[in-house]
Image (tube, rainbow, N blue to C red; front, side):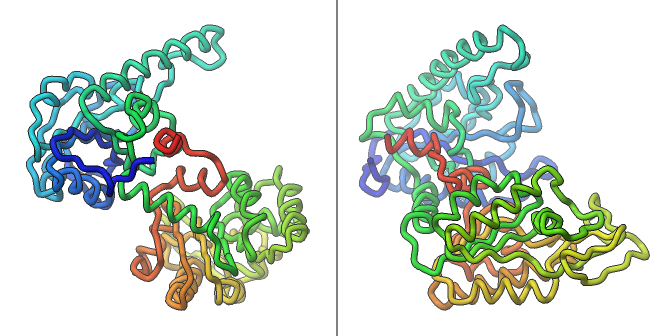
Amino acid sequence: MQLIDNYNFAGKKAIVRVDFNVPLKDGKVADDTRIKGALPTLKKVLADGGSLIIMSHMGKPKGQVVAKFSLGQIVDEVSKLLGSPVKFVNDCQKAQAEAAALKPGDVLLLENLRFYAEEEGKPVGIDKEDPAYEAAKKEMKEKQKEFSKVLASYADCYINDAFGTAHRKHASTAVIADYFDADNKMLGYLMEKEVAAVDKVLNNINRPFVAIMGGSKVSTKIGIIENLMTKVDRLILCGGMTYTFAKANGGTVGTSICEEDKLDLALEIQEMAKKNNVELYLAVDCVVTNAFDFDNMSLKPGAEVKIVPATEIPDGFEGLDAGVKSQKIFADAIKGAKTILWNGPAGVFECDDFTAGSKAIANAIAEATKEGAFSLIGGGDSVACINKFGLADQVSYISTGGGALLEAIEGKELPGIKAIKG
């Protein structure tokens, strides 16, 4: 596989898939984290004497031109952060002249790839149950190839630096790679770091290995949990999952989130842990309330907040965070770890009344990292936690991946990476 560090971009045009799906406010970039993440790759091309063609998606326009999702809104911010003027073309499939005119040091940003349905490769306006769907799907795949071929024609080499979309077999993240030989396609620096971080926690493990899985539903994490069962030494399951396990073990959970149809699965996971000699940690107590406003992430006037056993939540109350005893149990389980993976908070951390569980986990991870552990934080909520607590610089790696990271942890092959590695 070609490495970006070994490639000389002098006189070359590089088409780079980035993830500039950034939040906007009043038509301006509200958070430039993703743009900054791609800068090392983009600057490497320019420093070598190459020219850049940058492509990305924004939002979910579903094959339609939608003004609020135009990448034209981020041109000024990309120019400022990159330190080079950025030209913009308002149709990603009609940039032949602009691409041909690029000189070393020039930068061209293409309009939103998802203004074309061919980018995602899904038929539009036809239901999956329709008898004609399969034929429409086949036709769209051919169109996707042609779409990819046009994008590839703009450049001499291809770089994928968008880990957040690596789990999608889209035109710009996977199919386009077919139009470049192995010496002229590569992962960008951000992608390399993400792949290395995942590999370190899944295949190059220093023990003890502790994984912390949060989130509201057991069902959305079962694939990850099953894959981790053969790898981890300790597994902490927290967040909304707590109450499905509590009820499965004969407890009462009040109005807490609970997957009634997954109680047997919760028991199976506990047996799976025993079979694989994995120490499984569940909350023994939790912080509950009888009046919470999820729309505003705040307590309602007159709300009562108290700590109760996780299996003894009164009627009318719901668990929204790990209790004091659970916080200590989780922190002690993390202590001494050499490899740590955290995905999903322990509670509704957005509200300060229910942030202590997640903070205890974050502090314990930071402390273990200081003692030499490799810690990988992934998933939007976990990243938001670590940033809220001001601990981002005290962990080893924060993944930008979201869904891509989860699928990688689940053991799935990511199309965006396979397209480069072969």
